[in-house]
Amino acid sequence: MKGVRHYPGFLGITIACLVVLYAPLIVVTIYSFNDSNSITSWGGFSWRWYADVFTGPEADRFAAAAWNSITIAFLAATASTAIAVAAALAMIRGGRFKGKSATYALINLPLLVPEIVTAVATLIFFSTIGLTTGYLTILIAHITFCIPFAYLPIAARLSGIEETYEQAARDLYATRAQAFWLILLPLLMPGVISGYLLAFIISLDDFIITNFVKGAGMETLPTAIFGSVKQGIKPNIMAISTLMLAVSVLFVTLSYLVNRIGQKTRT
Amino acid sequence: MSTAIDIRSVVKRYGTTTALHSVGFEIGDNEFFTLLGPSGCGKTTLLRCIAGFEDVSEGQILLFGQDIAGLEPNLRPVNTVFQQYALFPHLSVIDNVAFGLKMKGMALDARRARAGKMLEMVHLSAFADRMPAQLSGGQQQRVALARALAPEPKVLLLDEPLSALDLKLRQAMRVELKSLQEQTGITFVFVTHDQEEALTMSDRIAVMSQGRVQQIGTARDIYEGPVNRFVADFIGETNLMEVDVTAISDGMADVILPGGHALRCPAAATTPGRHHLSIRPERVSLADGGEVTATVERVVYLGTDVQVMTRLPGGVPLSLRVQNSARIAIPAPGASVSLHLEEGAARLLAD
Image 1 (tube, each protein chain N blue to C red):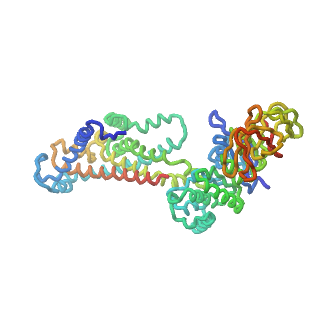
Image 2: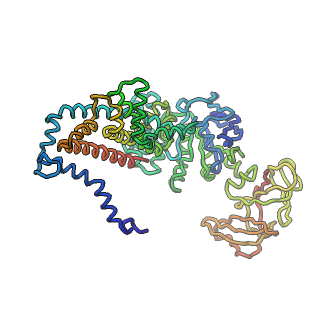
């Protein structure tokens, strides 16, 4: 079979895609080190905008927003991963049960529904039940839409683990709980970690839903950045964006590596 | 001999299909008992019912007199050696072997010592700190065995444990398994589709097909006295042919072979008429003045033996095994030969 490289136009399409996807990121990253006040003309290399992020006039706002983002991401990833593990166990080890396909659809719904719809629906839901928007409502919304992102790697890992390991444990006098904690969970760990990191990054990055349910005076990093940009893009935004990009790349890479190590230990 | 496992009319259904049709027999204490049959015959299902991974739909399974229905697998004093071993990949060899002891609450030092002893028994002491993935198939198999034997179960269940090994290793493991069983005095219930495995190791064999037990007996009983076509065909090689039965009495039948030769042989069938006759190829010999005449069709060289495929008058095939010896002349295809049926060569089967 001919390799994909031999198709006509392969090189052109590849370059076009790479440029469209990555050129903005590269520009932002480069200009975050720009010494100039302008966002378009290069004035030499400098760390000044990074310093500005941590010590400048907006530093307190960004610090508070970053704190909210990170704590929410941590809590949402933890909760959604726990729920995803339970869901994966039910879907893959639970045998046949009524409403299984419906359950599967429900778990993955946040992937399919346009985010703006989820955002509006979630806001209406909170106001209907009388929950004041704020930290808690952001957290609840994040847990919800993080579930499928945590679920997918966990479920993929679980379906690759043969049931005989748990049966062997049960056969060797382990209770259901012991078989789960001592045998299945360690085997499932690469999927769990990968799902956790993915959920964390999805929560950290979310803007649309957060913006709807955050309430007045409450900011996460993405909404804080958006707030600043509305008054004109300053180079410090590029520095923040580059920092977030670095965190995202780090987490996605970790998730990928953990999965790869996991594949090697699969027996 | 006291009874280790008493299986009483066990039925297992999955939805509308029935995997076990009222299976019932007893397995003695200290016995090496084999469930033998082709895939899908229900042997593994029965094993899983004993282990507790499946519930029986009807009937009872008694373990040393105690009904174990509804008992969780961890509460049954039986251990299993799985087909693919199912060694815990994240635990070292010694921790795998000690797992059952840990679950039973044995202290760390005691279980390490006992697991060490078990590894010694299967000649793997040097591998205690390796991970399962670092072992060969045969070594993993022995770890699985040590792991299952460590908690001193009353019954050891083995689910085709040798099927993933190559021939040489399989033959060596047969001997090792048999001697382990004799050493430990534990009842072994061994599941296999390999009749040779069953014949060489077992005290008794239950031949299963389509969810039913076809015959239970020693290797010799089953090989030499198959009760029906399935058993005769499944165990070893045999010639099966339809014959006319003129009379049956006291378990002996008068039958007419194709070609007209009359024969008296043991019978599992009880009524005259048309039945199947089994003739074991190694009990037929080339003999001048033998009672049966046949035409040689093909000769197949098998090393220690030579298989001579002949046809009786009327075209019914009959094959025989002749020892590859300088003293015996092997006829050429097309030659007419006379054959002698030794004592016990033929047996009339029930359908």
